[in-house]
Image (cartoon, rainbow, N blue to C red):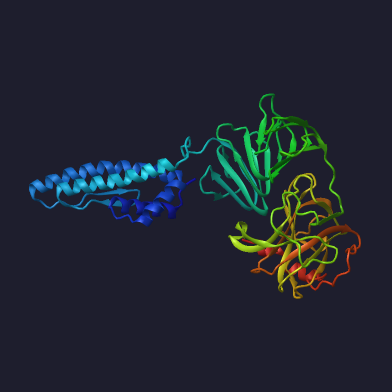
Length: 488
């Protein structure tokens, strides 16, 4: 990771003040932070420190001679990378003491940096193992334990680095040197092992991969806190979250081992397995995604539910529970504070497939008038490209607070969050997550039931008030497309 022009200028100024013994406490903290974050800054600092030590000795000798000759000695000056280090005249003893003090200060910072640096890490990147392609949304790349930087198409990926996608619409493809493709979608993070270049650790999120065929004994390994997956050449999908790992094989064969008891199974075409402390580790057939779907909260939140709080009061007749939006910090949107309900991540199995006659229905209420948005996060039915598609309702405004309403929307009225092109509605898209999002301070958005049908809208279980939210004005939905809100 190279220093920017601004970082280099800041580093030179801090080192100049350090050499002049004028570096404040805040300056020392800024210097330490910069050295910790940037390997190149540490190399620059070490060269500067070596130069300063030589200069201290030369300055003390020069000032001793000047004292003996009673001549005026101009302050020695040295330029280093644009920074000018000036030594001021004085008595020889004072100069030596000052030099010693500066040297001690420099060494103190050096010791702090060495102490902070993780053991076994040199700060230098490993060999190139691949490159980034199809970068969409917020994608970050980082050296282990160091500050992440925004990733770009064509950027090299090295062993020891991590790659992260932030936000439901973020995605990236990593093409390894042998042609293997590893795709991340949604909130996901993987780390490429420094010691084993054929080892990818999936910390959380969604991964799809097409692995080139490999010789026996040369498997590509995916690991999670629960599982080890050995791949010799196949197409697979993997998701990790909520203390469970799900593996789906589209083509080929993989070996899946549970780390807690070392039990292992083999999966082949069209099979999947769930790995968790509670699961029965065995191959299961991969079922197609249904075109009808329903979810309520009578039995609590589904396993792996990401954001929302169960509530049991002020419910519609016949209901046992609902989920209320809670405050979150949206790092994909410049750390904005928002109120959200975010479903579990059904990357492997999917929630439902979307067709031209599909409708989504939501029973909800708001404690105060306000707006919210519905995002339907989708993947391709075959885990292909584009790997993540976000459909949005646009702004939905509710003015009748304190009442339960049913929002009924045809999927033909939803629009892509990052494209003006209409989404395919032929079963190609499979929803794997839902997000209800409100930019208001706290409108008290609560959702009691969500269901998806085909054909004419299905009647809800109980007669309730007609929705005043934002029904069936397709022009208004188009004008309030989420594309503008997601634009950077």
